[in-house]
Length: 188
Length: 188
Image 1 (cartoon, each protein chain N blue to C red):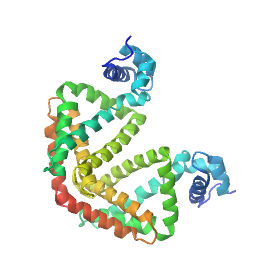
Image 2 (image 1 turned 180 degrees about the vertical axis):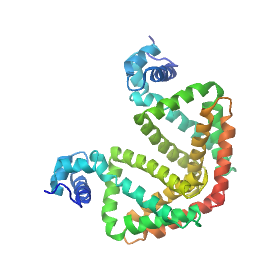
Image 3 (image 1 turned 90 degrees about the vertical axis):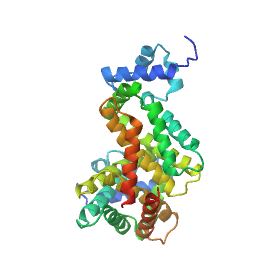
Image 4 (image 1 turned 120 degrees about the vertical axis):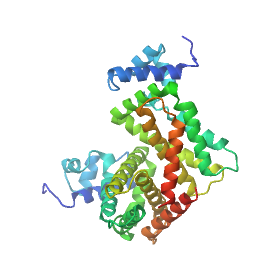
């Protein structure tokens, strides 16, 4: 077995999800996940700190969203920057091909308090990172933190609607949620 | 020792805070906290699930804020409802007499990843409870969730400013933060 495998991370994530869905999160061990992925247990721990981490995918989403914010042209406002971030999530993370896996992942997380807790912490990390990315491109406080929270509210609502049934466009749902939030905010 | 002590909870919280500040969170045991409070260890566990819980105070704040939202006159909008909640926090939780204790608590929490994690989870529970309290009095979605998030952003920013130095009015700080957030939201 090669010490470095370009797909190890994805294989481990897929194997973990399959086992969690089939036999439950609690009854699945790291050794089983590694075996199913055809990798050594030590390889698992090069990629993830523990079993909880394997489903998080959080860092990838943080990078995806903050990179999109950073890549928005300087003249664009904070709302356009987070619209670009939500569109990036629709193009790269919440695609038609990944619908089944994302939905299964959400179900496993919802069924396990430990994973739900980790998910909430990742959400806070995402809010902090998005706020920092917006400040970085010149959005002042408190607009930076506010825009980041609105983007996360839109993302969460769109994700719930998108996973509920296949065949929907995530970006369209997320931008509609964001527009509704901005409209509600203007009316407060 | 009486089995039921009306001040047991507060005595345990105060004893825990004193020990955490003096000797550190990690080096303090539940037995020491109970001893310092003049109570049995079993009394500690009637009030708190574990050592992490003793500093949370989260449920009291949730009740304080949601009760204030529920008590706002029916004709008032969601923004007035969360303004009442922030004012209640200033009158009951973040008062001049409690400034020292609140500041020490914040420092202990910031110094311990385990406590910081618990704090973030409480924050999510607070967002959920405030959103539900707003819906209960007729605020539709997504305005309910949005208003709850704005209130929590204002509370967090005001708390950071308020604990930084004594002699400030929490309610004034929080309402100014909320006004700035609403102004920024209207401009998005």
